[in-house]
Image (cartoon, rainbow, N blue to C red):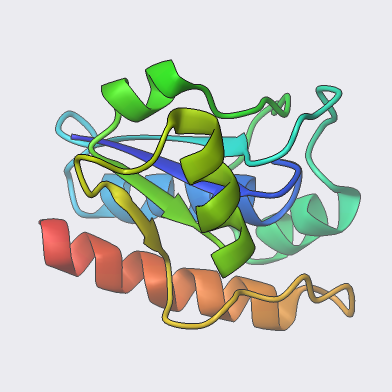
Length: 140
């Protein structure tokens, strides 16, 4: 199974979700069955992981590696089982880029938008962790 997380620029919320989900999958012993990636819903210049997001992941002991932002493509839609967006705007942008959602793969991680919480990213982290746990429980 392949999961792709998407946010606007692929430097904050979606890579945070990618690294959190990878840890949850590894802890569940499912790394050989589920792969995770992330992308942007808008054109990106290939930025790196936001410094505040990296600090929060480090504080929470979530392993992360080098990350280069990229934009989702129609090929990503074809290759992934789930495209998980951080907010409603991302859903609409992704559908525009990939040509709709004929296979019903595009979802939001939560029923509400996940905020870009610059004040230490605590709310962003908590929301993404909650959503990733629920997603893993649903697909496991």
